[in-house]
Length: 455
Image 1 (tube, rainbow, N blue to C red):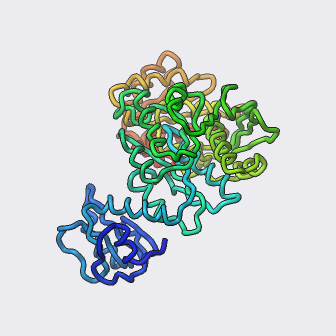
Image 2 (image 1 turned 30 degrees about the horizontal axis):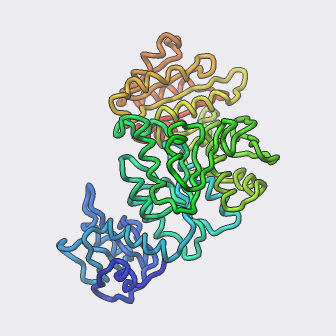
Image 3 (image 1 turned 135 degrees about the vertical axis):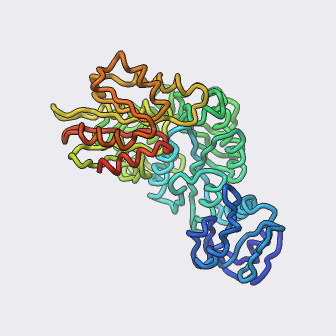
């Protein structure tokens, strides 16, 4: 972005104190990440961002938003006083979005939204100037920040949109007015706050609340909860999945150690993605559907999908100290995600004397159903396929108890949350060069520390 403070003040329906000709080239709410020409947005959360304005100025901030009535307002940079800095940042993002006027693709889902976002951006970048959400910056702070970071020549804006409460996606949809809305799937993520999958589906459908009248809704057709709710929309609809009834559905699928290949119903093109698993093929079919919406050929889409770079910590293969291959998927976790990852991992071939070792950490935010949902994963683990199981965290004790009748004691290991070092030591003593290992758990369990030690 590039705007004078006078324009920003006008967009926010207020005035600028200080030099209103100051040119702003970036926006940041973290004082450590501010750069020359930056507008600092002091957010109030666990810590008050206003307390860090001096650091922002020393790092090059040229201006700041400031909550009306907050003490110690700086006098050496341009200032715009607002009722609420976060709301003002969202209003500025809304103004800048209208100014640049890109086509907006909004993507949400209980699982797969980050990967799908990366795939969609890769597909569309073949022919368009595309700006996408970085990492998973997908909430009421991240979405406006992503908008404000896009270049003026952006033609398509690909936004990941997350939610952990009702109304959140409604707000993000109102902010962005998507031209294309995508829902990857409905799982159990955040079920602690919603209670049922039906309510999760209702909340995910909020992404369509401000879908443009001539827009398109692309969704997982294998999910009855979405099929039912989609009937209420007048916009064009397309589905993806593995049913013959889906608009785009897989007709062939093979998963290898580092990639998966598949074909679809209405094309002779063969597709390949640098990730494994049926669930990632589903994400790829969502990206194919979006690519087709924008007129991309299947050949162009296939080329882009074969080379796209996924965001870190999503089914990445690493090499361990013993020579073992380690699949790291430690950003988040819920029952649907664990089943998908473990199933895909179980399809990876190992050498004759190699074993598949699963290291599973607690799945968080599952509420009162957490014990049953953890124990329910037992039907995904087969001793003939997943040879060793390491379970970590208080909730995984439920899965440990459920697996006692399936696994011999020497192949089933449980550790409390204060025993990570012991678990890592046991793993390092157990793992052999031809083994393969999967790490899967919620981010709050910090299995990335296990990966670091195994590497």
